[in-house]
Image 1: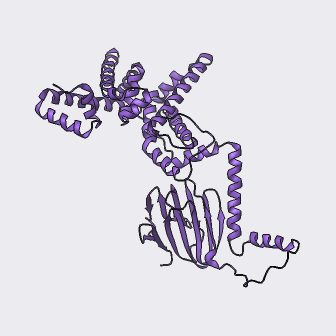
Image 2 (image 1 turned 90 degrees about the vertical axis):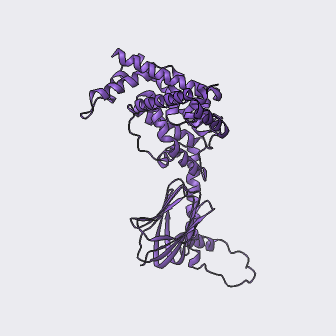
Image 3 (image 1 turned 45 degrees about the horizontal axis):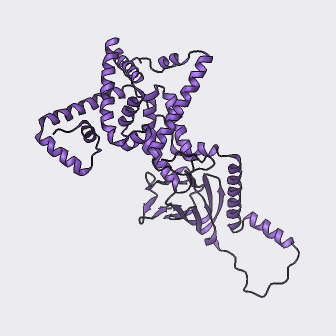
Length: 180
Length: 245
């Protein structure tokens, strides 16, 4: 997969149709993956859009568009987090407040559903990074090839690793549930 | 010999080749232990998916066209200038091509003021372009609108899907004035007019409007003529829109 960018170009002609088709096929999946990964819907929306803007500006479509989009989005998440971490060290701890403000139980929501959401969030945050990405990418229906390319894995062992990721999730969820 | 975990997961996710899947389904038919492991894997998957859905938020409403426009706005300044110059030249060329256009008169006036050239050899009398030549061609971008401002004089619009790269609008009878922008073309018909509109198959999205009504939408490989009902499909690549009914 080529990661080179040609920022001076942009997609044109018949490629525009392909861009639109890629957007329809992947935007929702990438947004949901990022939303689940970060727990921050605004950040997820910004990064999903930025990934598609960069795809458009790349000037040509990559060989494996799905893996390219996920890789760009993941790099953007990492950059944002490292910038945020630096900012937190210098300024005020606003992130924790924002997470709470994002998910208050609404008037129609039961306390138990809010608890489940909190437990799922805590479970994902506690999982090893590779297992977390595998679980979330597969949940969005990405192929074993896309998952292997994105995470640098051997495609032949993606199934075993996915089974392990689900087991880690369920065990960690049980631990979190018991702890509260 | 039982099915290993890799293949249980691959079976669950449709990642087995056809022959492997046949072999494994054959084994499952005979092995209760492996059937039980597959059923457990399906339950685990469903449980994890259900829990993950609990933390989902609504997907933001954004379109491919909006993101393409945002990408183009970020284009480097020289590219923006080049695009503007190309667009200006294109619009000027199209304006010159329209019979009776002020630009054509202005250019002709300028050329008449030039020093007299040697007399040309005798030729046939000059042929003035008739109304069939009146037209304009523009690159459609990702979302393009062709709007006919006044429906009254328009009898018919023929729409053709082409292999070309530009949206072309021609007045086959009557006359028209054209005003072009980067993402739209406005057509004002004069007299009883019929038009031909050629839309590239590769154009992602082109809308045909008459006044405020959309009479045809070409999006990707689909063409939608509802709900206005003015246009009907005449063939796989031709639509006829009759406005005088």
